[in-house]
Image (cartoon, rainbow, N blue to C red; front, side, top):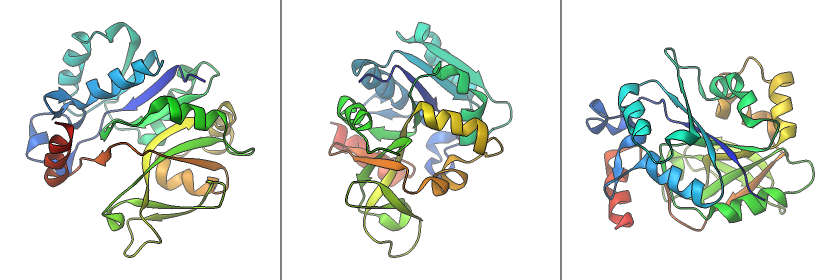
Length: 234
């Protein structure tokens, strides 16, 4: 299975990564001299994903210049949000982009070297009744992440968002494959939602399959984690 279309959420302010993000959007910070968004586009393209939507807001001119000069420019739709719509709001306003096919929703400010074909295959073989597949990863700072609980079949049965002493260290990577069934649910049940994590995921326990990546996956939201990502990427 190949997932052809991906929404890359790239509009965030990156406040935790200041001062680096005072003059550069988080999606363009370099990892081993390569912009984060470039890493996503290259890895997704290598896995067969060929059409992208990138939302912009903070320092959007820099993102526009990057895309204009990118080898992927003819495959990218840019949607500028003068007012941030929120992760669910962006999805809701761009549901037609998926063209009635399963598609990806990605927080593009994470450093991810996951095996995407394996992720796509996991979604194809997900348990019956699961309407989306979530990429997860192991973290050494579980109290700073959204931790998920799984049943024996790898289906999400609980969320613990940035709490002290969560039950485990398996974290939500905020990379999702959305099924056609879920996209239909967005129209019917979540039309007023603005935040994907807080307003939608909690309503889908028992309906989310988890794929744990064994490769590098990092939230680079702080200077400490950004430095670590560059060390690991060498």
